[in-house]
Length: 435
Image 1 (cartoon, one colour):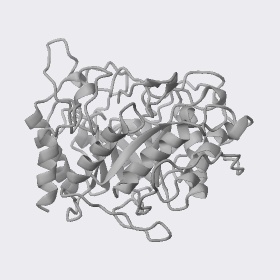
Image 2 (tube, helix red, strand yellow; image 1 turned 120 degrees about the vertical axis):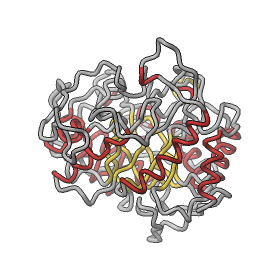
Image 3 (cartoon, one colour; image 1 turned 90 degrees about the horizontal axis):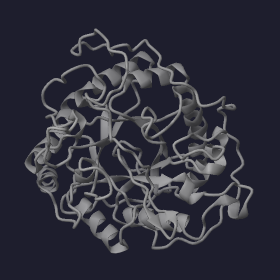
Image 4 (tube, helix red, strand yellow; image 1 turned 180 degrees about the vertical axis):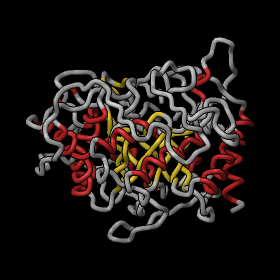
């Protein structure tokens, strides 16, 4: 996804990274091996291959250190809301986590399919009243969880040896506190993607590079998991690790960080889930390579981003390439081959952009009409429930249109810039109300 870096008082406020292209589509120029395996078979093409991009550098042990370090307590702007984050499968967890309120006229508590959510850019620059209004509207149409990007470089911009353990106790953390509390107060479950490495942790390189020592990320995410215990129910480890625009890392390096983060999150909040960073597309080759590098046992949920260009999700995919929505079956095949069939899959991004097309657009840049967007949203819910029962959460990209990226990326929202519902939002509200 294209996630811009916003500025406020010379500090980035975005929880998400800059990216020139949302996902790899048929014309994106990726040089991945093609398989002769038919897309209609149940075997993932090339599922026995391992893919290894050029490593960034040698990494230390993947085992995380235990010390929490020092985290200042700036106080929590806003009032803490309900704490229950459930078990990641739609079930509440009363073990000290309180009770969440699904609320809203569009509540989907009667819906037995995958829990519907939205990518919410709450850490971006918008007014607090706009945040509140957007969250209220999301709840009213049946959204039950939000995926929130948080920059590690924003909340801990300085090394742990500095004041307050390097944490931004005057602005970064209080902002994250308030954004998370606003969502929790409305009964929404929250999943945080912790990404964008601070320079002190990766030798001064760009934020798309992993930390030189995975233990630094582990210590940070453990402290944050503890801080938001009972409010943030899951932690996604970086975003689209297979996309060089999002993360400059080899498969092996990503797995080292993932495996350092896994026990750290559970130390900070034993009830939280660890989510394998959603791959751009259903990249079964990358996921297979991650398993070969030891990813099994280092995550509770596997995530993908199955964008489908401007095509309907109904027909069979045009090829076995991983970006097509229905090729999630190949991801599942890889999981089964590695004995991970008990783990769920989440689509932590999917959606269609509403904009006119031009002859110069690549296939992955093409948009749909607003009525098509509405129809495809309901199609995905029905198809996923019927054909892919192991997918138990979906997050629509995104909650609201934007103005800070490409035409394609600016128009995925369920709501317009002025927070008016598109037909997709209204269709979802009617759909969930009818269940």
